[in-house]
Length: 299
Image (cartoon, rainbow, N blue to C red; front, side, top):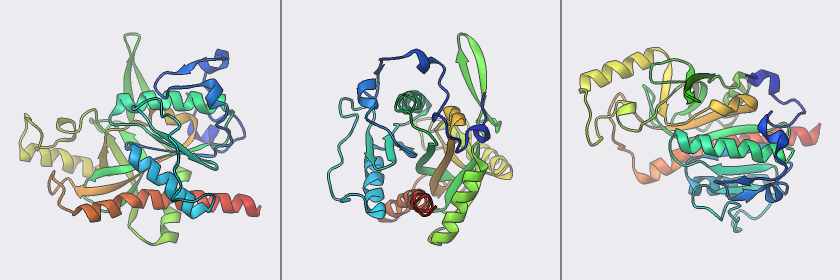
């Protein structure tokens, strides 16, 4: 597989997609969008993905305000209005896409997003994943930039069964991009930001060692032992997401912690506080995008 470093900011198609070369016309089954439509989506430099359609629309409205390109109060149409599975919004060089919950939903979105970028002839694309998470030994409201994604066994790999065979894929992300985002956070000086590893699980409850699901086969002691082992290995947050296909683009994952899982499974912060927390990844990524567009304009 191609490394992030070999593709990072090089003037070539956003991703090398082997099957796309022979596809002159096709349907994006879950985006409900044909190539005819995707050809109108071009010149994107930044793609931001997240779970909630509302959050991704909010991100586009936020980008409209800080880039001063359009009225942030304007109505931004959902490009994927033909389906309720995903939502997509755009403004200037920024594309915002929702991916739903869990690895299967995200995998489908990434396949169709990469095909979309390929057919639109986008180059030098940077992808961000923004969202919320549970922290491990971190205060609520801490923003975590993922260095590497690991599985539930603390191994830096994504395992998938293809044609009856187990395929392992690397989960490293762009370290240079992570450092740039950390520097942007220092410039903002609004919230604590760290770089750390992220544990990717297949399940929200038992897979994340929670005790508040319908059932579980372990105790509080078992949970604490597992989470402390994760903390020792610099795992900062739990998520159900996938960086499987990010290896072909410059990419970063930026999430804010809602709670410290070592102290409990239930949220204790107010709705207003949590709403403020979830704005922080948008603020950080927005600052990065605005800064890079300004630098490009000045050069």
